[in-house]
Length: 349
Image (cartoon, rainbow, N blue to C red; front, side, top):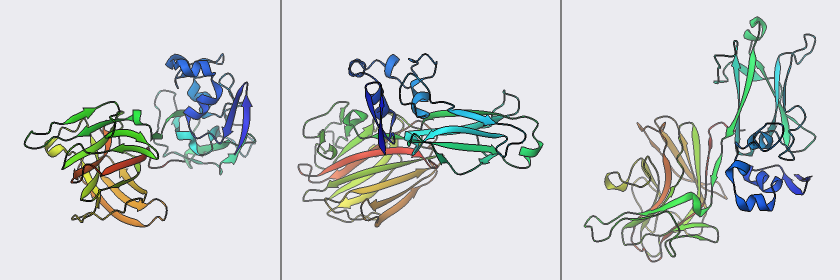
C-alpha cells in the first residue's frame, strides 16, 4: 500500500471500503453534517455527473474527477484486444461487486456472466490500488456475433457490521411469563454495550438468551456470512447460536427461526462442540436459496470445531442475521462478544 493526497485529503491505499474513501475526500464539516445528499453513495456532487460510488469504485483520488478511461472497449479490427471490455476495479474489491452485462440490442440484458470470459489476468494500474480487468464474449459467439453491447453494474457487495449501531438487542422472556422479553434498539449498560474488542451481549435472566440482531435486512441467498466472535459461559452452561429471522425481533415459536447451535461453554450438547474461553472463533455460513451450510474454526489456527447444515429454508427473502447466547445458566458472568459480522457474495474478487 501507499498514500496519495486528494486536495487536502490523505488516502491510504488499497482502499478497504467506501467509508474510508469518504472520510478521506470530504471535508470535516461535511462529515460532521453527515448529509446523505452529499455523502451518500448515490449522491452526485461532482461536475462530471458521476455518483460518489462510481468515483470510489473506479479509484478516483478525489470526489471531483474520475480517473482517465475508467472503462472502455477495444474494437480495432487489427488489434489482439479487439472486442474486449475493460474497466478499472479496486484491488481487493473495496467491498463492491462488479458485474458485466451483455446485450445484442440494448433492451435485453444478460447479467448471468455465462457468455463472457476473462480476456487476461487482471493488470495492476500505476496508481497502486486499482487493476485493469478485461472480459470478452466466449467462442463461438465472439466470432459469430455481429454486435454486442457491454454494461457494468457496480453495487455494494460486502457489508461489514462491527459497530453497536448496526445491531438491536433481544432477550427472550420466560415461559412462565415472570420475566418479560427485552427489546432494545440502543445500548444497555451491562447487557448490550460496546466493549474493548467488540460488542457484548448478556442474558438478563437465568436461561435467557442475549441476542444481537442486525438492524439491516439482507437477502442471504448466494452469500457467505462470517461471524468473528468469542464468549464465556461463566461458571455454568451456555450455548451459542446463529440464526436468521424475517422480522425485527425473534417472534417464532420457541424464539427460534432458522437457527443452529455452533458451540457450548462448560458442557456438551448433541450436535455441538465445547468452546474455550478467550479463543476467537470464525463461524462461516454459506447460503443458497434454500440451504445454509456452516462451519466454525479457530480464527488463528484454522482448526475446525464443528459444522452443520439447514435444509429446506427460504433464504431468498430479506432477513436479519443474529448471534445468540442461549439457555444461559450463569447470566451474571456469561456473555457473547461479537467482533464483526461480514456478509459477502460466495464468489467475490
